[in-house]
Image (tube, rainbow, N blue to C red; front, side):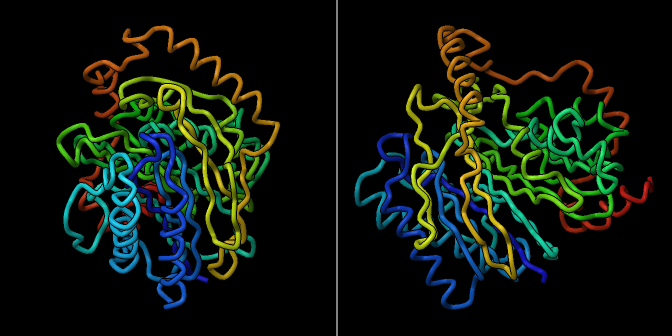
Length: 391
C-alpha cells in the first residue's frame, strides 16, 4: 500500500514559559485530527509534544506537500493558538506561525515538516522523533551513526541488504543547494559538511536502491523571519528493519548525549538528552512529553515507535522509557552541570556567527551541488542518477 507519513510540528504556546504545553492544547489538536479522520482526510494520527512544541503525526494517501494535509496542520495550529493558548495567556502564543496566510504549503511559514511517501513493506516499523531547544542539525550526528557508522549499526557489516551503504541528501540552508553523498565511499566529504550543523543539514537518507529510510525537518526560523524567533526544534521519521537499521540500532545512536546548539534563548550549547514521555493515551491518540526545566532545558529528544499497517499507526511505544537509557540521562545531566558553570563564556554560549572551517571550500569544490528549487521539483531523477553512479 502506498501511504504518506507526515510529521508537522509547531510551538504555539508554552506552559509555563517554555517548559511544556498545556494538556488542553494536545486535546484540542487530537479532536481536530479525529474529525479529519472521520471525514476521510487522513487515515490515522497521533498528537504529542516534547517541551513546548506540538507534533502532529498523520498518515494519508495524498502524497508529500499535500495542500489539504498542510492546510489541516495549519488550521490546527491556528485554532489551538486562538482557542487555547491565547485564552490561557500562554507564553509565546502562535510563536512559530510566522506568516498570516496559508498558501497551499506549510513549509516556510514556521512549522517544522518531515514527510515520506512509501510503499508499505510486509512489516513497517517507524519511529517518530521530536527534539526541543535545539536546531535541525542536531540530528546530523545520530543520522550519520544510524546509516553510516558500523560501530553503531552492526547491520552495515553483517547484513547483506545494507552492505552497499546509503545515500545522504544534505541541504545547505544558507546557499540553498543540495548535495547527494554516498556512503561509505564519500563518508569523509559527508562528515566535512554535516559537522557544520547550523548550515549543512541531512534532510533525507536513501538506501542505494532508492528506498527512503529517514526524513528530517530542515526549516530554519531565523532565515525565514530574518531575525531570531526561537530555535527550530526539529522532527524526524525513520523506518526500521528488513534491509534497514534495526530499531535498536536507530536508538543506539542516541545513547551518547552529544552537544547541540540551542538551550536557553537559543544561544547555548548543551547535551541532547533522550527523555521519557509523561503519559501516553492510546484511546485519545495523544501523549504528554517531557518538560524543559533547568536553564529551559537541557535540550531533549523524544521517540515514539509505531507499527504501520494499511496506513494505521499501531502504538505508540515510548522508545526511551527504558532503564538502558538511565545512564545516558545521567551523563547528560553531568555534562549540563559542567558546561553551565561556564556561564556567558564560549563554547557554552554560542559565538555571534558560526564560522566555516577552512577545509570546507576544498570539499565543496570536489562534490556536486544542485539548485534546491530545481532539485525539489525533480528529486527522483537526481537521486536515481547518483544511485546509478551517473555524473
